Length: 203
Ligand code: GRF
Image (cartoon, rainbow, N blue to C red; front, side):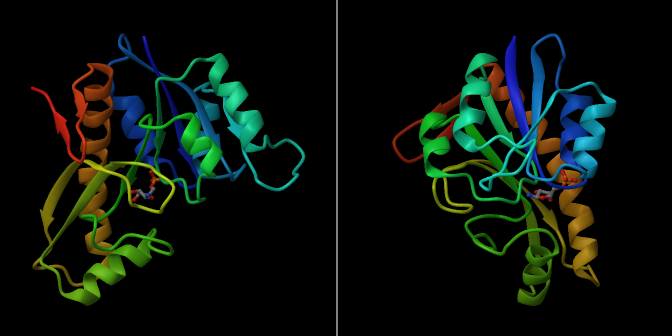
């Protein structure tokens, strides 16, 4: 069984897409990690009986710090960490511990429209204001810099006729819900090949 842990901060539509689309005989969502104890994604995890770990860099009751979280995740043990709308920067020690085993989904075509502050509607507004004609979703390795690690997979969508940033968000979200389960399954099948500076997906 290929064990994944999904990090969330928001409504959890990508978590739901993963649960719906990944083959359960091959991949298991072992836990959900969140910095927000009441977000939609956490509620969805609880409803679906997925264990939830809360994480914080501050000393908050009921929350693990990242060193404690590493120990918890090592016990599972985790094959892949999926950041699906997790809004906090992951500390360096955590990234080092799980190098090349943390992926993130970003709602634009990196390396454009990424980096600090580029999340949620900010991304789609920036894309809209740029007058770009395509947007899309990117799955990439998480490293110590926001939206920076090597790109694993991308899918694009035509936005030439949109009237608002929200319309872009809707089109991109549909793609995210296809792309993320696709990539996770490729990891489970050992089809993600990391070369020096390129990632390829074996067929
Ligand atoms: C998605 O657009 C994801 O790409 C971004 O945050 C959003 C999370 O949405 N990083 P959801 O919580 O999965 O619905």
